Length: 153
Image (cartoon, rainbow, N blue to C red; front, side, top):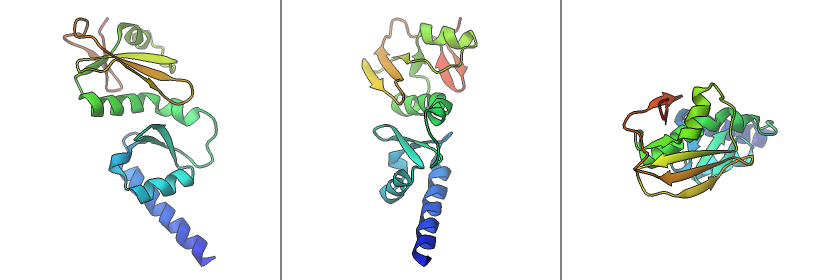
């Protein structure tokens, strides 16, 4: 009984730490000590999105609800971390959908970047990002959707 209480307290402490460093429920593994990360994964409180990136989830969550709720937050934080806030932009196709009010999670988004990339990234629940270096079509100015640079109409 006492051991279970101690385990619960350690898990609660790890969860408190993860919540304090999470950005919109997205956690970069480099920001969370390994002992806390392993505890939270084992308890079902962290789901790996891609290597080094996690989503805080409820231990009893099932299906894709948490992922689809955290998709755009992950996109923003991952791309800001990888490229810098103004060094990427959603492609014209991905941008038009958002301008039209379609906030559903697409199977794939295309992101144009200034830095070398040209990489597909498989994400959770059959979603993906394709990173494409395209200086010629990179916009001089862009708008933002939930903090993500998108092409203006």
